[in-house]
Length: 103
Image (cartoon, rainbow, N blue to C red):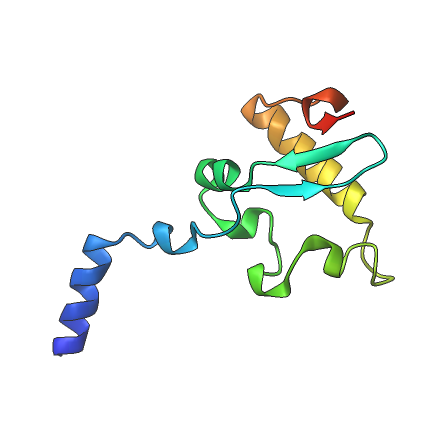
């Protein structure tokens, strides 16, 4: 019973969302249209949950670990373009090439 109370108190002090807010500040994706510097931490704060982008969980590693490597997965570029552009349309982020790519 004491452990349960301790866990309840800790959850009130440190909200569960903060557990997931770990990760790199930025992630860089090379492309033929110029480097894409993804502000991971800023996007993570806006979205609030990892599963929006990391659909198989963060323990699966980087997107390129499966996408473009395993034959049954779409290319990382195609996934990122769809996912990022759809979200940017909803949240009024940049949707043109120069909005993310730095030629």
